[in-house]
Image 1: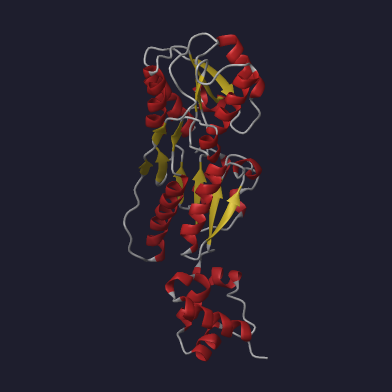
Image 2: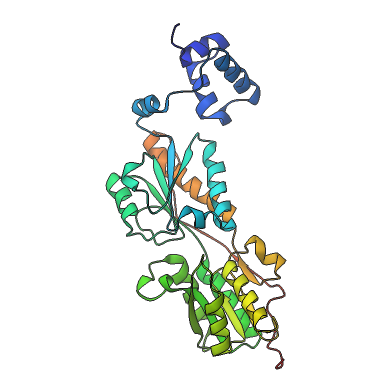
Length: 333
């Protein structure tokens, strides 16, 4: 039986070989009707798509984009904000026939074939990032300090400043900050934590907060209860909405009224925030994902010989959403 190739299908349909190739790798280039006709003929002939290994050898590309994470995927993808970002990246790059390869901390980046990568909130000196530098893989950094390529961030500092100023305007002078230990001090290379902490401190002005350390993806109930009991803050600024949700639960456990006894502010506008009446700083993870994909597309275009705009850093806006979890300091309960 003769070997079925792209040209075999092209001859049967009456189109060019490139058109058949686009039906498999760049479906957005064809009308839905033409693509369906090509795929139907391919199926009839027993052809199920180009051999990935052969295509990689012929083009020098893998058709894959790596996504580096600092957290185990089980934790990272359990967060709806991260999942929305990743979904937006996948949707945007699928039009170019590119697939995503997840790279958790335990997977050596030097062993995975990829044409480019998105480093998501990573330490720029992490071993996996260093391997990508050595390989010359184009990398877009997201929510991190990144000097070796395009960087996509949100206005973490401005959003945190607005949240703190909101509490000051409500009369709060005893404020606690719930943030991750890895995001302060010697580890301030972590862009998100460092920027949010700086913004909170700027917004609080002369008010000196208590800083309590929590785990972004962990169970912090005991430590938050201890902070509320020991320091008696009238307001909490939280590194994320998931931490803020735990703060609301801890306040309830202690019989504290929200917001009369303690006001709570989160960050991200996670899907849980609206249901909890949580004041928060909203970001748009879909816009962030699209921006990261477009920056990577522009970065890869010169390598593919296509003209494209020079990629530039992007800082996306955020906005404070005031809900029921914040209010003026109330009388003793």
